[in-house]
Length: 82
Image (cartoon, rainbow, N blue to C red; front, side):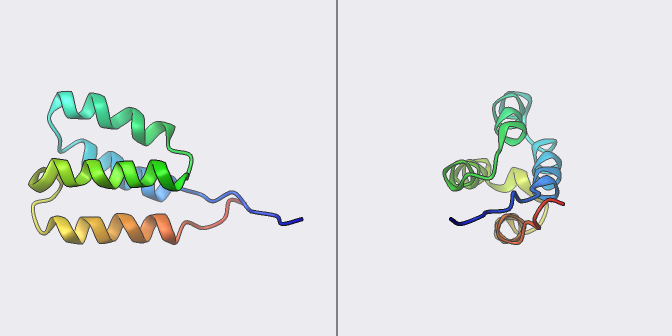
């Protein structure tokens, strides 16, 4: 039997909330619930990344690709919950 530890995705959610504040109100209303309901599932994460791509330059004052990489690393490196 394999045991999987639950991961702490709060750092990822915190960063996504910061990004959400940069969006238009209607986009915030759509994207906010995705962040709050995020459970760590890969399919959910792929949807979030796809949506970040749709928001384009709104997600950063610099390179949006840096934001993508940062979010990807936060997902991949989520520490196990204690």
